[in-house]
Length: 116
Image (tube, one colour):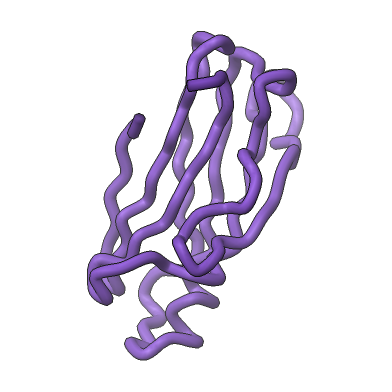
């Protein structure tokens, strides 16, 4: 598998992918503000159509994914307003490796892990 950064969002309450979730990738290295470097919206499989970082864009550093789940839930069947934005901070320490950061989502909580 090539070096890249990918994600997907699964809605455990609906037992399937979460379509239409806005995802923003920010780089957090340095003393300055977070730098937005990629954005996308999950498709009907809960994935982005393109990697957030391709092999040529991969760099070691600290990153943050922001998942806009508030809009997803307000427009969905649950109508939940508890979660708004889910931030996931992580470190890429080997720019030659594949990083996959899934989000498992429910109206009242979430979990994440380093996937494969």
